[in-house]
Amino acid sequence: MIRTLLWLIGGVLLGGVIHIVAILTLPLLAEETTWTRVAALDAKNRVLVLPPIAQGQPNPLHLDPELSYGLCRLDLSEGPAYLSGSLPDAFWSVALFNTSGIVTYSTTNRDGIGQTVEMGIFNAAQTRLLAQQQIDVEEGLLVVEASSNELFVLLRLSPPHEVMRPRFEEALSQITCGPRPSN
Image 1: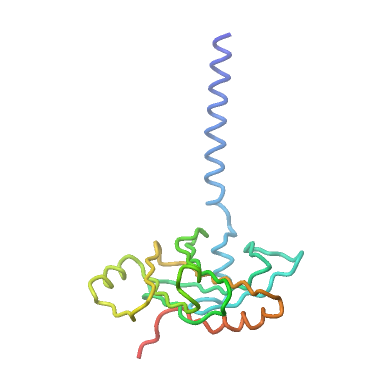
Image 2 (image 1 turned 90 degrees about the vertical axis):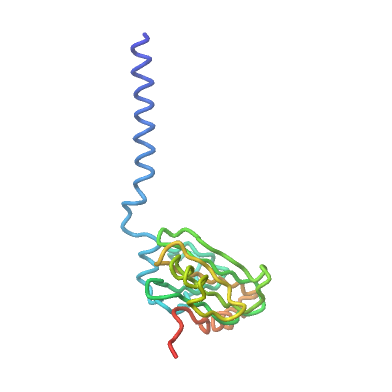
């Protein structure tokens, strides 16, 4: 009886360990991830306005159809990146995602920023240079340190009415994203 109980407990523990290992490793084996979907888009160092999500159509990035989206892919190994421009007077948010699709930084216009986005995105080495004043930045620039070199920025705008969507998407297309052009 005790021997059977020990085998049963051992089987349950082994099954639990195998279950946990399988759950934790399966995402690492996936061939199609958020990053591969973003990397396939033509959004390197520029804001790409994503087409509206139609009801019942595929939505591989799982975006809210009520919002307008701009996406920019960055590689900080090429140097610091900057996000700059003005957005309409409505709710907007900016989020930085790493290659795993995890938000590493996010802000909204409700954080007291207003309608102007002026953000500098730096990796750890560039942040150290910034602290040593070896990189010049404009006053009022929101400095964000990214945890990795490869990331993507997702801008979200909430048009109050559907008829305003084209104007909001035009404003998104005017946002600059990427390294500063050398003078």
